[in-house]
Length: 312
Image 1 (tube, rainbow, N blue to C red):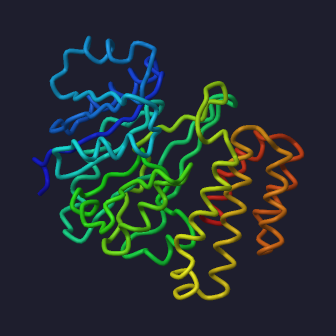
Image 2 (image 1 turned 30 degrees about the vertical axis):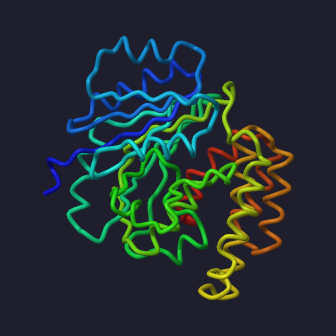
């Protein structure tokens, strides 16, 4: 059993002291207690350092960037200084459920597993609505990840440190990506390691339209998708059938529509949903397109049913 292994929890933060309190408490309150928390302060000016020092918690290690390096490079700094056999990630505006680490650790008893993720409870604060994602892919899923990011964002993920160290270029999170850098990392790790998941939600991830976050900049996602297409062009052409390549393009456009909806931009979302439908005439694309005329909230609510009827 991996019941006594140190887990390094990396939290990048920038000027979100009040939200950071909730995130840190959700880690300190874990039922699995052999942890270190690495807070990488991305040049905050809101008193974040004073807050961390006031906690007087010897399991927290604090590092401050001398300039804005953004989330990807801040996570890399956390990885560099981590001491744990396993690494987990948490954003400064999200929180974990108390048994998150305890339920993921046993899955690493399989020495071939490099990543364990989980379902996430997505909470849309503006609409006072939440729904749970449904994990579907595990095992050697490199090919599946070339089609779509089935693992999702960083807050649910725990990684075997050796799986990160095995990456030949040692880029970890590639900071050239303006977004989706986690997807790139999952692909690279999955090339040599199995993936597993906990089916129940272990994370509460917030979508707040009243705070600044990278995901509100749609252009970042456009640029990130272009970079992913360049990075994996050879693998996609060699490993995916024409149908699978079409699926990949469909998911990219549908993903962009979903990002636009999350920030309440229904008009832009319709553009991407229609584009997705033209690539592959899937029912959920045209339904999302039609529902977007009635506002973002109804589309977001419909995602709950899409994940269960059509799958992720």
